[in-house]
Amino acid sequence: MIKEMWTLLIDKKEFFFNLLLEHIEISLLAIFIAIIFGGTVGILISEYEKSSKPTLGVINFLYTIPSISMLGFLIPFSGVGNATAVIALTIYALLPMVRSTHTGITNIDKNILEAAKGMGSTKLQILFKIKLPLAMPVILSGIRNMVTMTIALGGIASFIGAGGLGVAIYRGITTNNTAMTMVGSLLIAILALVFDFILGFIEKRISKRSVKAKKTNKIMGIVAIILVAVITIVSIVPSSKKETIHIATKPMTEQYILGEIMDILIEQDTDLNVEITQGVGGGTSNIEPAMEKGEFDIYPEYTGTAWNMVLKKEGLYTEDLFPTLEKQYNGKLKMSWVGMYGFNNTYGLVVRKEIADKYNIKTYSDLKAISNKLTFGAEYDFFEREDGYDALCKTYGFNFNKTMDMDIGLKYQAINQGKIDVMVIFTTDGQLSVSDVTVLKDDKNFYPSYLCGNVVRNEVIENHPEIKDELEKLTNTITDSDMAKMNYEVETNKKEPRDVAKDFLSNKGLLKWGAKNE
Image (cartoon, rainbow, N blue to C red; front, top):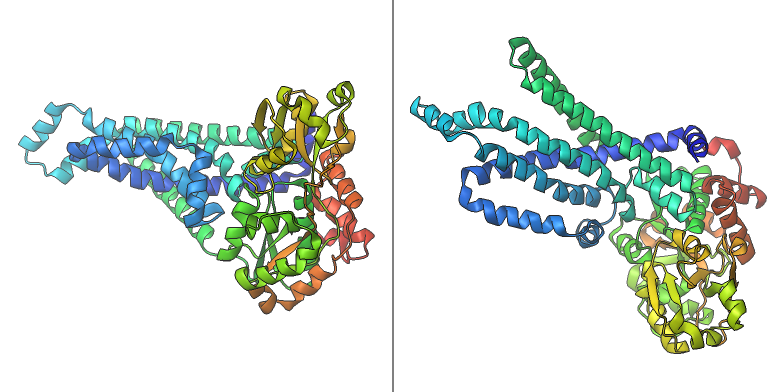
């Protein structure tokens, strides 16, 4: 595993380096805001002690909210991406910052403060000349803990489409690439340790009282402030000269591939720049609202999902309803379906082969008799869909003993290890052919059609009609089997989604400049 991780790190050093820089950027912004705001709040509640209990109570409450929930709460207000990640990380960083500042100041010997007052010092003089210097060791200790926690917590940012090393972790889980997950995790740990070492060094420097040391410390402080300011400006001001098209993908292997296909095709044939936000957590539930806000321009979607989850239609979707689907997308959402790939990635059910053989289970209806003995596993959103778990159980009379929510990338691992007995699959899953499972027949035709195509904001098409031309080139180019094979190349043969996308475009005669598009 170590050799595999090292090889991956060397081969994809640019990929990991960019993620590392993004992680530092997001973390430092949150840390900087938390230090300024949290430090200010800590000073104020130490000066006005009556406000300390309610203030700390509110911050404690926010701290208890699970990180995923916090991100979910913030998405409707700040959307997906780095901004939401910075806000969430700042909120979690506030508690140790406020608490350490308040504790450090309130624990100063009262006799020292009384002596300062007796000598005629003002409140501001006492604060900046006595309180803060004496409280600094405690404050710095709080900052060290806060920084380490923030860097580690930054790994979840990828769940809502932000950057950072969490992208590598999440992509590794989704594509069954353990080495990528481990490298991403290890780099976060190393980064946290490096920052802890730097802060430890600063702590030692501050403790030195000589004139020379104070002068050096002042210079180092100015450099640090300039560095943070530069990072802040760079993160806020857009750097690209070309207009950028923002593509979003769900946390699925095939979506990673489709995103890369569109990226390569658009950038090679147009003057537009493309930015992909890979593996947005929550899939449609987070991407589609972001599309309405203009945060994303294009994303691959499935007709059945669009009918039930986006348009909130009840009943079974069939492809003869596609004209209605298109019309309502155009009218209500100001979006169009462009470039229907041709493959149908519908849901299916599989059961562990040993169970299927033991009880002679071949259809969904056969499963009903023993469902109360089995554990059912699926990705999170399946349990919330109109055509998901509840509807499936109602149609077939299932009464499973236990259910497990899990990431898409962990389902096959779970069933291969016997942690679950039955699970939802996609008909284009790359791991399906190499797993010890039996695919059951949907004998009541419960699952609707899920043809895949690209949803594009109409405004983008109006401003850049060339995008429609490029996406139309992908119409009916991928079969169910083709998609399953491409997924297999990524999940089992460990090929990069971009390399698989290039191979596909090359085979279709759509790749013009090959290696130049790195």
